Image (cartoon, rainbow, N blue to C red; front, top):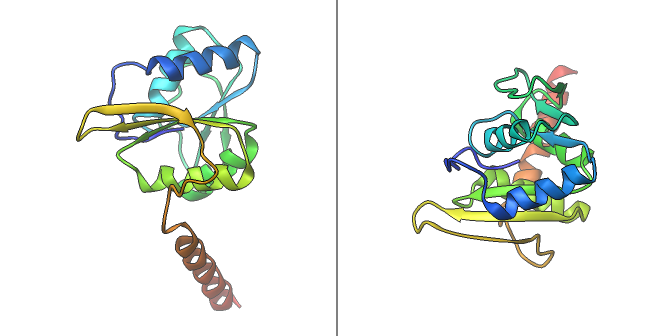
Length: 162
């Protein structure tokens, strides 16, 4: 998965290399369908004629470059992202401009101890780096607060329905 603000014309070499390793091992690749990084992943996999791909989506499918199998992972972005992360064994993430959604995903991947390559990119400075998820780093300083607020909202919704 990755940031929709990532507008590069092709995948960074570090990311393409990891995808090549996964496809050489004949791993199932679960990829999103959002604009930006997910489309680059899909276009790259299609260019390699790789078929063991599942395109994860929420309510609707926006992009499926290879006419691969699809799977609905939830009703909204948060639910889709969470379920895709829980379904994977490892991850490759393109994180542009410290996107909050991706930061939340990194916190979940960290908590679940899933091996994750992160390609960080800044559109402001046009700099990038690729490295493995750091279990000591805080990617989303508001993660616990957001989780607390989600639980409060769910609790209120259940009480309203009763």
